[in-house]
Length: 88
Image (cartoon, helix red, strand yellow):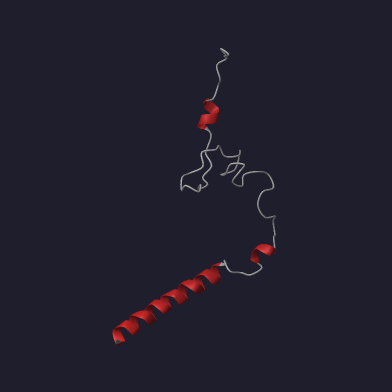
């Protein structure tokens, strides 16, 4: 073995990736400089959808309006179920 002393302090002090792993733990890899994720979880250059990506909004299932509408429908269904239970 070598007697070379390794300087691992800066690497150990670097910010960690905040991605959630399959085991519900946090990813322990260092984040890419200037980003919050490691290279495997989206911090790599040119990862993710391009700017002004029209395909991301093709079906509009996850827009704020669609999500709010689904929540409102769930509330109405819950109220209808309670009313039916009271009528029994």
